[in-house]
Amino acid sequence: MKHHYTASCSLRLALCGAGWLALAAGVQAQPSFGAHYPIGVEGLKGGSLPPPGLYLRDYNLFYMSDRLKNSGVDDFDLLVYAQAPRLIWITNLKLLGAHYGADVLVPFIYTDLEVRTPDGKFKDSTFGLGDIFVEPITLSWHWQKFDLGVGYGFWAPTGDSDPGLSTAPGKGYWGHMFTLGGTWFPDAQKTWSVSLLNRYEINHESDDYPAASYPYSITAGDVYSLEAGIGKSLSKVVEVGAVGYYQQQTTKDRGTQASNDLDRVFAAGPEISLTFPEASFFASLRYFYEFGAEYRPEGHTVTLTLTKRF
Image (cartoon, rainbow, N blue to C red):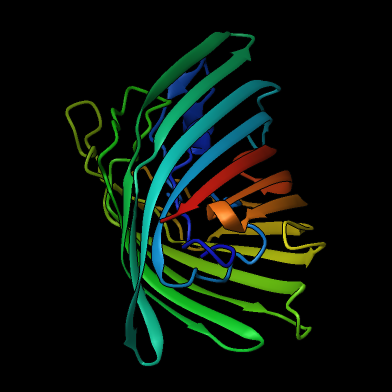
C-alpha cells in the first residue's frame, strides 16, 4: 500500500545476511532467517492503495550499515542495493464495496559484506534474483476522510539461497504476508495525511535444511512490521513529511540449532514526494536513520521510488 497511486510494497532485502555470522574462532557463515519484507520501503500515505488502473513501479533501495548489534563485532561493513520492478493492477471489480487488485514484484539484489576480527577477515558479495512476491488479493476502500486496505501475498523461494553463500539473495523458504493499512485525512482538502501500515509474516521450513552439511531443519519465526507517516501537501506537485518504522520478530526460530534471539529495529526520517499529473508519473525519496536495533544490523536506508500509471 502506498500513496494515492501505488499498491503495497514488499521486496526482499539482504541486510539480514550479517546475522549469519558466528565469530568464535573466526568468521563462519550461518543460515539467514527472518523477514522477507524490508521494512521502510513504504512512506507517506503508505496505508492507501491506488485508484483503479495499471501501474509499473520501480523501487531502488540502498542500505548501509557499520554496526551489527549484540554480535561483539566492531569492524563490520554492509552495503545492499535492491532494484525491484512491480506490476500493480487495481480493477473496477468491487467486493464488499472495495476495489479488488493484485500485484507481483521481482527483486534483484546486490549485497556486499565485510567483517574483520583479530582472527581474520571475511568478505563476500553477490548480485542476483531475489525471492519473488505475489499478492493475488488486495481490497481497498476510499471514503471522504479515510482510506483502508487489506491484502494477502506470498514469497516464493526463487532466489539463490546456497547455505554456503552468506550474501545469497534468496532465503530458501516460502512465506505468507498479511497486510492491513489505513490513511486518515484530517482536513477537507486532504492536504494533511496520517497513515499506518501493518504487515505480518508467517514462514515455512527452509528448503535448504536439512542438507548434507547441515543435518537439521530450521523454520524462521514470525515477523511483525509497522510503518507510519505524517505528510503535508505544499502544492499539487510537492508533498513532504516524516516517516518511521518498527520491525519485530514475534516468535522464535524453530529447529534443532535455531536461534532463540528475537531481532528488532526502529527508524525515522524525512520524505519528499513529487507528482506530475500530465505524465501520470510519481516519484518519492525517503531516508531512514535506524536506532534501537537488537540482533541485526543498524544503519541507514535511502529509497527512490518511481511510478508510472498507464
